[in-house]
Image (cartoon, rainbow, N blue to C red; front, side, top):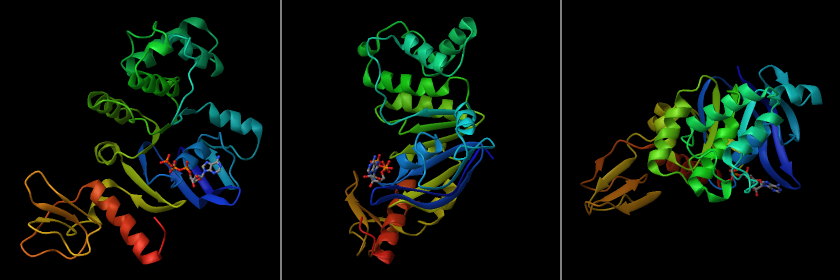
Length: 286
Ligand SMILES: Nc1ncnc2c1ncn2[C@@H]1O[C@H](COP(=O)(O)OP(=O)(O)OP(=O)(O)O)[C@@H](O)[C@H]1O
């Protein structure tokens, strides 16, 4: 097991961002899906040990980061974290920035440190951009530079908050290739359901500070089988409907309309239905 949350909760003043949660993470790619404000970033910051929990224990590679400062340092040595937004010193070059982060991560010897910086620059396809000032990089290139700093030292636990936001389709596909080839545990938060279906071994759906689904992509898809239709009219009571390019109406949930046929659900369909079912049955405000 790479990391665990044991009864971990987080409250900001009166706002409960995460209700008491117990979770174990093993090698593979774990995707956190959920609407804005659900608590994804809170979980990632807790796991990264940059945010102290209100209750519970957080363990990373055997070190209980909530127990002592020394344990937290040991845990952090095994973590790579890329937050949603990184404030770069824009006057620096990409290479200079990564070299600086590598120094902070205790890479003391210059030659192996520089080799590591070159390695992670290559991994995110910025090998030929290292000497350029960060202010001159595009938004997508800066995003990849932020990911590169998290890859330094091949951490056991790699935590990426919305890593594919701002990347073009080619770069997104390439990042998926990179993440799926890593040996350790990778935790990503995303709004891109395609990333989840293409990449994740395990999906956690978060809603109002609670994990409301924990399983594999096929298990998530199975929850929506027989509930997605296409036809000349919309399903009554559907959670979502839209007119497709063929002129037919695609309905997610509801009572199948006459002459409609069932479709294989996507991760997005299953996610929408999970949320709708939860909000209808529990009266949770979306
Ligand atoms: N520093 C803070 N102070 C007060 N409330 C906060 C703070 N950070 C987050 N919150 C609240 O905690 C809840 C969870 O926020 P969080 O950022 O974890 O959600 P998220 O799922 O990552 O959202 P998004 O998809 O928009 O990034 C929200 O209600 C948010 O307003």
